[in-house]
Length: 123
Image (cartoon, rainbow, N blue to C red; front, side, top):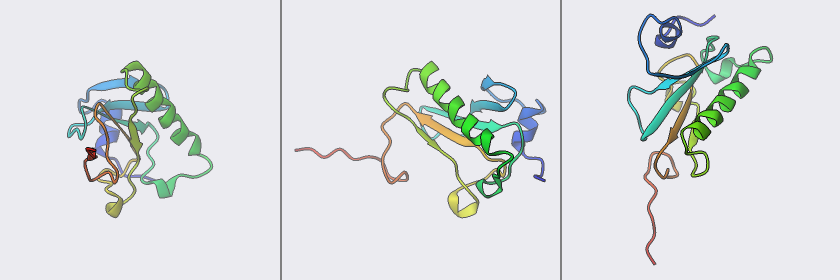
């Protein structure tokens, strides 16, 4: 069983968030420390601490998070240009809140590796 997190408090409306999407399974809201012009977190309403805790009973929730991400991409006009959807796992993976969440980032050209800006080569 997962401990209560800041995301649980957002789901329960105990603290405010700029919510862009909600259904019975998921909630999407703007990241308070955006790393791109569009940076939204998509979370399941059922708390799952890390990717390591995904199992047969809750795996459908992860697929649903990606469906929500694609819906937001289309609604906000960046589906065709592209976006990044990433989930971090545990400390070395960059996870800071132990309730799985999908980062959806868009509005700029993303580089690879992710910690590096994409450099354009001039010829």
